[in-house]
Every structure is written in C-alpha cells, then in structure tokens.
Image (tube, rainbow, N blue to C red; front, side, top):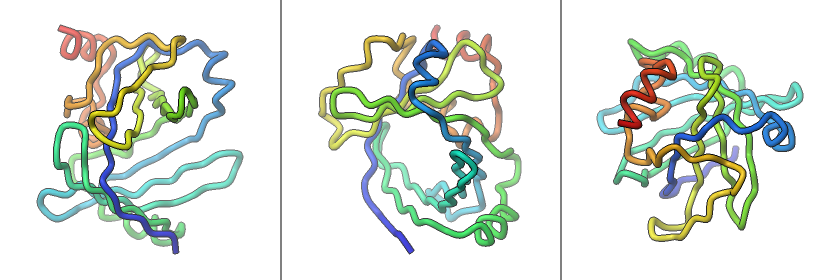
Amino acid sequence: MEHKGHIETERRFLISMPDAEILSRAGGDKIEQIYIESEAGHVDRVRRRERGGAAVFTYTSKKRIGDISAEEDERVIDEDEFLRLSKRQEVGTSPVKKTRYVIPYRGHNFEIDVYPAWQNVAVMEVELADADEEVILPPDITVLKEVSGERRLSNHALSRHMPDEDEILKIILQ
C-alpha cells in the first residue's frame, strides 16, 4: 500500500473559467471527496478520483500549519475502505464533486478545479517546494484573486456551503 507523509505547500487562486480548448487539452479527472470525522486540528477526507473508467481511492489527513502549508498524510485505499469510511461523513457536510484539470507550465503542475455549480469561475492551485518559491502563472489563465489563506474557498468549507458565483464575487473580490 502506497503511503506518504509530508508538508504540503500550495498557493490557490480564484480564476476565470478557462476556455474549453485549454481544459480539453488538459484532460480531466472526476473527483468526489467526502470529509469524515477526525481528531481536533485535523481535516480528514476520502477521495475517489476517476479517469477513463479507472478509479483510485485515497485517504488523506491534513493539519494546517500556516496559510499555505499543511502537514499531510495520504495513502491509497481500496474501494471497500472508501465506502466504509464514507459512512463516517462529517455532520453538516456534503460530498464535494469537481473535475480537476492539470496544466504543466514552467516546472509546475497547475491544478484547476471546476465545480458543477460554477460556470464563470474555478479554483487553481499549485504545489510548491517551499513558501518562498517564485511562481510564474500560465499566461492563458486569468487570475481574479489569490485566495491561498481564504478558508471560505477550501474544499472542506465548500463541503459545508457551496456558494453561488455572485456570492463568491461579492465576498472574495471586495
């Protein structure tokens, strides 16, 4: 069983929805993630990631250590464990469903999450080797605002409340 634990450092951006051509070149994985009961200070989830009919299941536990960094422990699980753990879904949350597109650019993989409820905006994130690393954003992506420390746009927060686009623009871009 694959297992990895590390410090994850990533920056997140609210972006305009990329052109369909850009997304189609990037492929796309269907993702469903369910937040489950966890110990204080940790956010635990199970995830199904599917491409071309093949699914990979993971269990992830994160503990935030800064605006852009978290201790992350992740391991691959089988479908039975995914289903068993899904039954421990955190009260007040719903599964988060999205399509993730990966765009390689200048040594980084920019992950664009497209949520079904949004037509005009998406969230892009990029994992960094360290917090001071310079990031050059892909030129064909329009960044509306960096939202790295914005908890209201974390996937965990979106599992509790999926705002519509007007609400996002009103709250985040003010």
